Structure formats: structure tokens, C-alpha cells
Length: 148
Image (cartoon, helix red, strand yellow):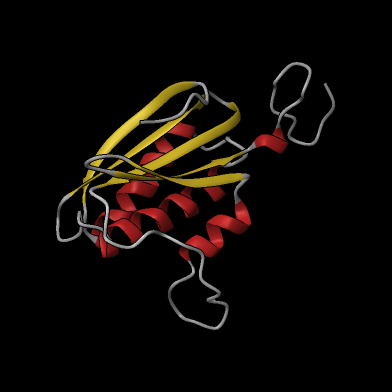
């Protein structure tokens, strides 16, 4: 279901339970590697999207939730899609600045470059892209604070 943001780097299907969130974060780390400049944000945002799916979607209570990561290995923009069985309501950003919960899409919207929702016949994908500002427009290499 991933849009064309480079190569498909990894796919995993996990049980739609809050206990699976740690495995989702570890999957992102194993695919991107510890040196990826967007690793921390990608892990956090994947965790938020996965939690939303495990709590609110029709995949909750142990149904399948799939995570797809695409991009260019070690550099550039990455795209993470979290795919579940959908739900009656559509995901939206809440103003949850004072709430203890409900900040998932607020964080996604604040930290990523782009995000969106794709509804399909039997599934819904909530995705984000991150890392656009970390690459050189000439060669595509990760800058990490240095010039090409």
C-alpha cells in the first residue's frame, strides 16, 4: 500500500494490542538502524499510530496491524504506513495539549513532514513521511550537519 517513497525496506504484521507497541518501535529501529537521523521521531510516530490502531480500529483486540517502511536505505525521506481494518470514524488531529491521552496525531502532525489517511475497501492506512530536511538536494546524502 505504500506510495513510491523509494524501496520497500521492511514489513511486519503484529497483533492489534497495546502490548505490541514495543515490538513496533523495535521493528522501526531494526529497519532504519541506530544511525538514521530520523530514527527517534520515526519510532515515536510509529508508536503513536500503532497505539491508535490497537485501541480505536477494527483491528483492536488482537487483529492484524501491518507496518510498512519505505525509503532509501540510510538516507533521505522515509515513509511509514500503519495499516489496519479501519473504523467507523476517520482519524483527526485533536487539540489535546492538556489531556493525558489523545495526542497521537497531534504529535504526528507536529513532527513529520507530511502525513495522511488512505482508505481502501478492507483496510485503512495512516502514514507519515519524515526526513526531507536531512538530505542534500544535490547528491541525496544525509547531511548530519555537514556540507557535501
